[in-house]
Image (cartoon, rainbow, N blue to C red; front, side, top):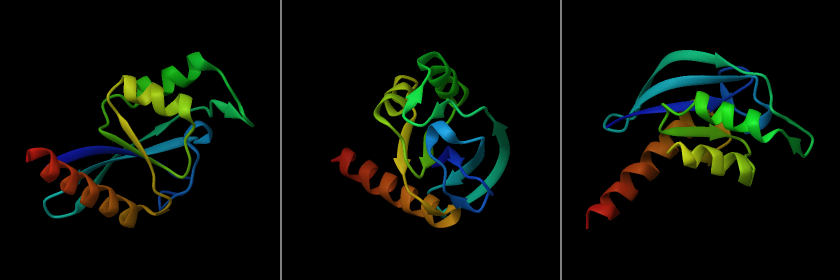
Length: 119
C-alpha cells in the first residue's frame, strides 16, 4: 500500500524536528509492500511554537497544510498538535533518526496493525 508521509527534518536526512518548530516538511510517498519511498516535495512553513507557547489558529493551519498526508514523522509533538492532525485524519509518530529507518519502522508498524485489524 502507498502512504503519503510528512517528515519534520532540518536537513532532509534525519527526523529531528519538533512538529511546531519545523520550518519545512519533506513529503514522500512510501510503499509498504517493498519498503521503499520516493521524495515528492518540500513544504515550507513558519514555526508555530516558541517555547511552550503556540497559537491555536496557526497550529490548525499547519495541520490543514498536511491533511493530504496519512502520517507525520517528528522528533516530538505536543498533545494539541497531535489532536489537530487527528481531526484531519493524519496520524503523528515520534520516530527520530535517519529518515529511511524511521519510514521503515513506521511502515512495519502500519502493516502489522493492518493485519491485526483484519482478524
